[in-house]
Image (cartoon, rainbow, N blue to C red; front, side):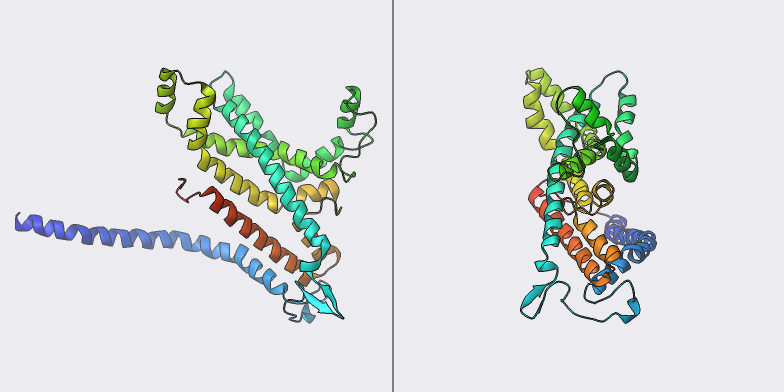
Length: 319
């Protein structure tokens, strides 16, 4: 090999190294403003909320705030335990939130998969149907909740009128006031609104599937149901898991839909509604901040558990 070739071969790794460092510097240059803004908008309020959770801060007089350690979480006075850890209302809110998240996300995933499979098929007017399906998701949550609150009303709601007209019920039902139906009513409204979101994410995964597998299955005469379970479902598993994780994060912090439909009812109170009640209604900033901190920890723990169980890598591959 000539001297020129040896010099070029030796210089190539050096050039690549310089190029990598240059790209890294450029990446940090572009990312730094976003990181700073994110730290100010999200990081600082989170740190301040965690700090307030260790104080006796009150909305009436924040200047008199004192550090009290873990008393908002657990404390004992005169032999009686106090704090979030032993507060039955808090644990009821935790159970309501987890139950709502599990049920709504499960139904939305199943329906979203069905809708995505339909939208992925070739038929006349598919673009119009895709746009129409997204309408519930595009409507603001407060507007959706108010609209459904009217339709679910026990006296003049259209849903009761329809069900009584076809003979399914004999008298009006207070869907959002009855403890037996209130949470299911919230789940129904949430499924109606958020299923398009799940369908959109799963549809994106379906659009990326290679056509070779399906052509081979068609040539071999394999039944479409078997193709779905053996080919389609395993290939779109990363997309489904990403959709489930994003939706679960949103469901765990549910506030507006439950608050508008059922207000502060203990039968449907979520962790976010509980924290808001302590912060605003009772003006207990320290206690409410402790509840918000536990909400953050619960969401973080469940997210990590979901990712671990789903074994989803950041690159979109399954282990």
